[in-house]
Length: 283
Image (cartoon, rainbow, N blue to C red; front, side, top):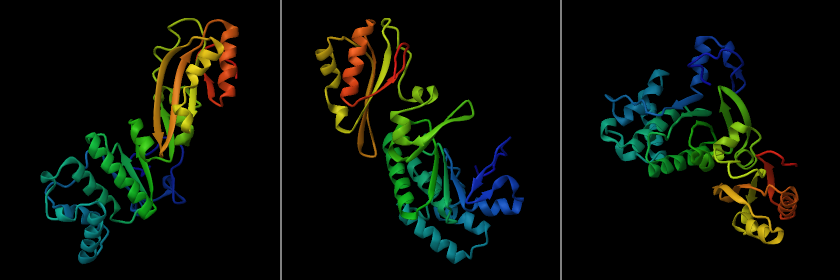
């Protein structure tokens, strides 16, 4: 996205600029507005924290005192004002990533690219870095593009998500849309393990999606009692996305067609989203 690697086809447009058409000088200017933080921090070990943050400003010719003021301001934002004179070797992983974030913000970018920015961190530090990124997004109004394999990171911080499979963009949408109603097999595989689906009998397999308070209602037991239709539960979870509960169940309905139809009708009347996963499921 910042043309460190040239795409074989297609276009990359940032802030109205088609990066494929820019000269090296023009590309360097655009890169000031699309900066990057890395999985393994990539700090300059021989420089202090302050010097790491001022480094990109020095490269673009910012006066020394102005660069220092900007760096101190950014260290305040990332919560490390007392580490200005420390060296990276004396910092924890989370502190190193905070320095990397401050450095990436030095040139007032419009886009912050995060390459697996939390995968090297422990769970508690990951949560702290995600909170920091959310605060920066809100406070500075910049776009954050985050690459991750961790579904919890997406639920915690993202507003939109794109699923890439086999180097192809297969699905995009809001986090709520893609998590609760994935349209492709690639997206569906991210949210439940289908390895056991269909192995317990011949009945159809369906995925139920519950939103809000319905995620905590005993709808499945109500269906079994009302329809006398026993089911097998293959997978289930309740997640919170932006403070709202989303539940999902993957169940195998009875092989008997009439019993399966009654169960599906009950679920539809209960205002539960039903999606076919196995065969012989209509609607």
